Image (tube, rainbow, N blue to C red; front, side, top):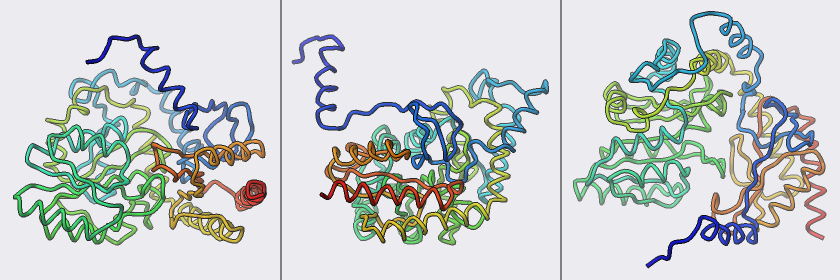
Length: 398
């Protein structure tokens, strides 16, 4: 039986413990636009911690369109209500149609955040007696969405297709509807789900497939369509794709793409969709412009890939321990949280912003620096980072 206590009494010891374990987090304060060179906490630094993979967050074309539209009488900033009330503006509607046409799905549906989209899909689709089969390293929002559904929830070891198939066989034997849930690109490791094998398993065992392609959409595939295009795959009628718009798109929000029935089910039954205000109309307009840039962005994606390769080759030459990632997310494995913090702080003093990632975001003793690369980074900036990393590595190995 618990004893009533104040908020201070309950959380002060927990906060102190987090501080002592080198796990306390503080929000950096930004004084500049999102771009490679930024003012963060009063420091001018080269930013290697942003998910702005194509450099669209401060793109002049998007800013110009927004400024021009603000002069018209056809759009407001706030949407004023939920989509099902009076918040569904023509800009939202056009954007949903354009996203679906681009991805080759029947429909798309906007959400204010990727977190809300991931909660909505699993809560809505999965019922008692169903089972969610999720990769162990899925994003926190996918884990929370599974826990908030009425379905059973089981995780399989990271990228282990044999383990996934065994769980699918169990689900089939129990006559349970299975939903396979995976990130397309895993946000802390930068590796990719083997979508070809997963799609084949889903089809063999009549499972539904839910892919959170937050870090793939815009950045991967010849036309930026994400992990499915990267692997030369087409989503089928039982595939659900979530794409976030605050990464390669440089804006904010998210969408779910899939069949007509899927989208109508979400509109009618998804609580995170029904009971929230629609994203600002101007944001929808900004996303439409970002989509045009992504469609035309093959050169930017090629530059991003060159930057990734350049960083990996340089990091390997100086003996850094990298994860086997071919994406813009390049973790440098350090192990201890205090070591990751020390490296991050040393980089800040040298004019580089690289976040230290620690538990519970990653497993215990897998703390790391998470370097994220953009098409906007220059080769010189990457070389400067590698030069400082080599110095810091020597300093901490003494």
